[in-house]
Image (cartoon, rainbow, N blue to C red; front, side, top):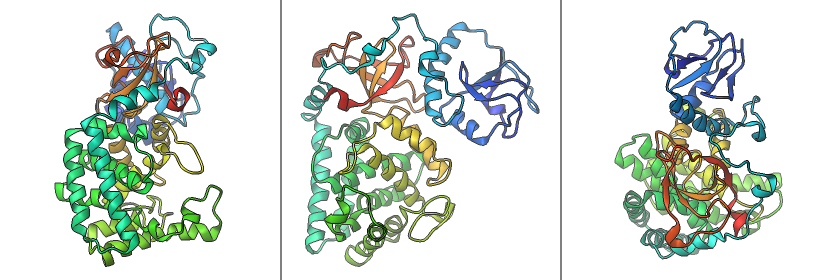
Length: 426
């Protein structure tokens, strides 16, 4: 088996034998040109080389892999990388995936949710007493009060939004992992517009930081994220809270919220131009099929492109009147499969780096059948996060004092086998 550096791969290269993403899972078939999409995925997740039994047309650089322990590590990473490539036609059924380490094979019965562990309660009970949670809830409450004032016609200044933005950025610097975890945890009930806006602002801030935007632009991105859906206040609840499908006329009213938001930002808050661009453009699409202006690619403001991705993720993982929330793992996969239709690929890469494939707050099953909650990720190795143990391998819930935190980057024999829907354990 030959190993080829990812840095030597180029779009259009053809291999004389199938190429695998460092293991058993096919990246590209024999005699099929390599696409930039496959290379981008490898780079996004830090995969340094691929393997093939054949020869590479145009590139002959090879590397012999002699360290068997490295092969074990790679197989662990590769199993999870394949899950990220959601549209690969060569996906193998899970039951055909070889076991990474010697362990008892999990039966279908074992895979069923264990009602022994009331995980959602045990997590929330601890987190609701924490300082980060109180700060998170305070920001939502402050923004909700501001929204209530705007809806009732109370004069409001942009300075109030700026103050909330400054507070959020300060608290986020101190508690980034906790704040991201609250998004998936659904920790706050009620105040849905304010909560959604704060969550979008948290994700937007982290993405803007990953993109190395200057501080003043990050502040505007956060302010724009806090206000991006405020135009919904001008629409009737019959439309915004409708459980069934929307008519064409109702859909057009929903789309008008960007114009309502822009009017509020410019005419009532007298906000800056950069914030207004986010208000207007956060539903524009990279391929030009968005609204209201059908802008294409780089013509869309960078702040709007960031908020667009953050808003989409937040919407997917939040409970709506017409559907249950999606688990974070599936939401990330959906973003990765966008293929430059809705979103700027550079923003998607930055977002997935800061979130990982198993975002903070995700409930996961490890290869020894124990359950854990992701509490921190490694940006360079996002598939091997730190996790807090919730159950033992038999499904017994651990007490608060026994919920050890394990770094999967150090514990190489453990790896994430699958993401779990927390609702199964409520």
